[in-house]
Length: 618
Picture 1 (cartoon, one colour):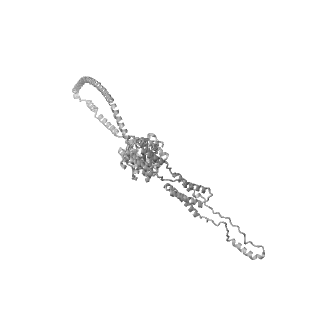
Picture 2: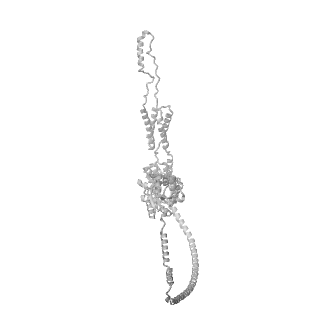
Picture 3: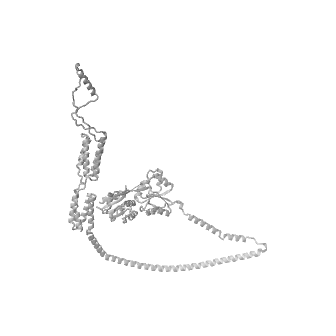
């Protein structure tokens, strides 16, 4: 039978291999991808608590999230791209997920419940480097999207060229592929001969998108078979409906039947009466003896005459009997023809009666539909009015939920834009109902307060500090500036007078000492000592430490630590580096500008709408 290769990751495709084996195929599991799970932090998992909708891309996304044991809002609407993913969600979280008819991103986005999602919190549980179609479309529709990346697909260890050598050795005829990543893993670093061998294989893929990706590898579309999805049952159906069978399985029943038929024919030929007649003729040709020649000849002639007469009489009797039977058959056929004519006439009459009855029934049905049309329309109008009245009534639970979500965005996440969006959504909901003027006034006051909050440019400040940090090693240290040397008269000059020989001898000795030790006097005695290389290195490290401390304080939103670190860095630059250098001037200017930033990370804003909603809900 044909050899089918299943390239799904480890732990998948076992049921498909079993089904193919029962069908008579030879199935081999050969994973070309491995799944690595990620461990997101608590901040990345927090949106699951307040999610309106949770979308899972694959079974791996479900299993990876389940391994984290997160706190998840099971009252949210769950979505799955395929049936197997939906079953995994049910097994993991006990929630039934919505599944599109078309098991891909486009089919999911076509669901009616994902059309009007403006302002809704949606968590997309996915793998790394997946298709951006879903995320991009949901953002365009106005949703607050949180991408939760929980796993990554990567090629398994080994060279794809070695894989193909093994596949050729086991005579693989068909290859099952369920992702574009598997295609990329297979078609890498292959020789021309290996590519040519792959183009003669049959490929069974899970979607048209994978088919297009395969076609880009110069695979003939006739060798690509698209299944109804990535499930084992869909793949099995796609493979079993094909004609990928070995030529060694031709039935031999026809050959056996032919041999049997030949045997039967030979047996019939052997058993035919021709041999008996031949033996009888040979016996008749034996010449009689001379003694009984006349009498036996006459007896034989008489016997032959009687046999001939009997044969002729029997033939005449058979013809007569056959003629009588033919007349009887003709008479019977004539009678049957007359009976059929009568039955046909009865059928025509019944057909006319049935047509008349159908016509009358149609008239009655038309009249009944016309009579009930007005009544049905009235009932529909009444139902619509009741539905509008029910929709017009404001749900206190929904209002309270939106208000709590706004508080969570404000206090827990410090997301002022998110809080503004939620309050705007609540205001739009209340605008459709009378008697909510006080709450809407409070909401508009909150929106005005939130609009005055200027976000801190954390990223820009961080990058500026990073630029200053990179220039620390290039700063020029202060050089020691020696003051003007005091000019002194030479008190040890030699005299030309011979009588001053004693004084000249003392002066000569003093000049001799000055060649070894010389003391110079300066006007300014406040001279800073020189710095060693180790001291300079420590100063640079200290300055870098202050700048890094300011960056960390910026990310952790500690304004006091940020300003203290900048102040200490500025003092170091002023004390130890050359003031008239262009880089030093630029560094001091940048530090002074960064010290003037308004880092109001946690402005005190109290939502006035909170109390109004509580009073209204009571």
